[in-house]
Image 1 (cartoon, rainbow, N blue to C red):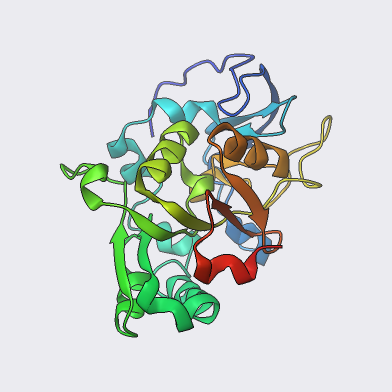
Image 2: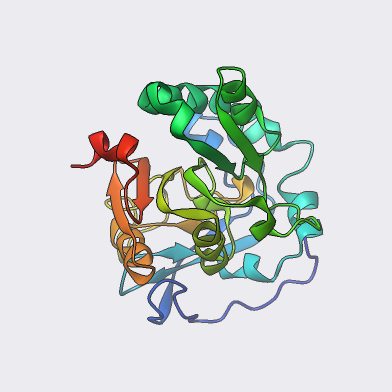
Length: 256
């Protein structure tokens, strides 16, 4: 973690709707999602300020926008990351693979699938073992491979990705580059609605810098991100959502 504390500006422009944000609260860097299971890390003494957009409700931690990949790897995604997210190695990607299979397994011969932010590729490997055309890609750490070289896909998944990105615009641009003219993007992130309110402390367990949860979305902010790019937005539930331009025929059974 950078040793010299940089002053946090009182306001930054919301990357979703460009409205000026306000400082909502400050938490310790070691605040983690494991606190929901009553597992608390020692305080680090490093303050992390979260800003809230008064327009669309998007919440961000601006400090991380200036971090290098090396800093993220050293201080967040390091060898101890498994302690504060024990499910990320295999349990979660295998469960997500089963979720995708249950939704579209009967149509897998029509699908070209990309798991965006797929880490070690566990989800795609599981689907390929069931006859899917599935590719895994992770934008972090950056490689020499250009994202456009991956081609186009008609199904993209991005599980546990949105809350981790320091640059929401780059994320949406990347997804747009990868989408076929008929494509569905299924992604997961918990909505902040009801959990982050003006003039209250930031106690929501999901707002956890030690996990790398630095972008927190309201329903309104996701609707706006979709509208800005000519996409439709919908939710399966409070944690799983979709974006699409034109729905492929095999996905139309889910619409509505």
